[in-house]
Image (cartoon, rainbow, N blue to C red; front, top):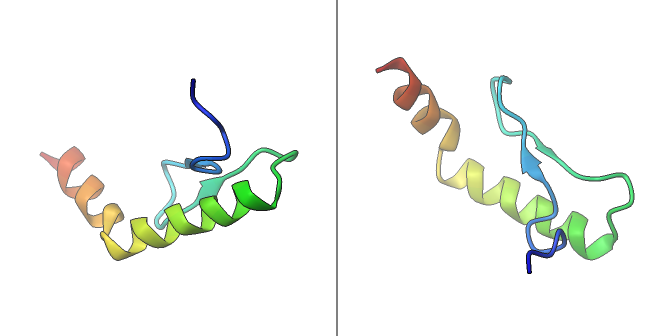
Length: 56
């Protein structure tokens, strides 16, 4: 079973940067994990990788 606390949120596509959206009822652990996921996305330069993937 998937726990929403594991990642804390989902990436919002269509913005020029990293944006992770969390549910309004997220607890502190979920928010901490969402920040960790956002940090990992920045470190991996995910925006550039996605841009390259969709540009062909």
